[in-house]
Length: 240
Image: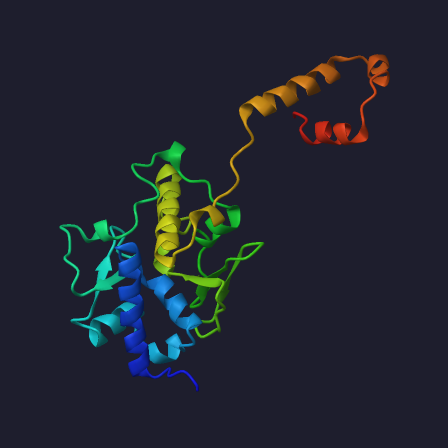
């Protein structure tokens, strides 16, 4: 028996997913993540929504059943059951901030391709789409292009072009936007962050060894016998 993917069924599914998430997490369900789940359930979300956003659909079709909330970042939207008692600040019903009181030295280090996806100017009237696979990539595609389960759209308003801000303010803004986007989409931030830099201790030890070898004369170096794999490591870690 085929599954019902009508508008009524879609409306019910939104309510069910919102309730299920609230019962499990006791927090707002990010609409970007909800959209992905509804697609996985077989709904043609783009067709069912028409020109509306999911937030507009909920506000118009599910008033009295599901409520749409804004996080501190107005671009981050979530849904909770209508019966939920709202705190003084709706942001309390979202996940904890990844960055709190960040300074330039505390900005999360994201993978270069992820950073570029939130900073490179958008190509015309297209949609910025990030492919969350290995390797991570992004592209600007037509708005009606099919989307797979591992692809996520980035709201144009979250992209910070080079001319918008400068220096630390721009870095913090991009970092905040990536974190907020990942939080709403239900994406593990660890998938987007770069590997931490090598420890200073290891670098110092490597540099000392290289410096010692460099201090030897040509005749003395000729007497040094090192396995080729060690030589290769030293060459990769050389200074200057």
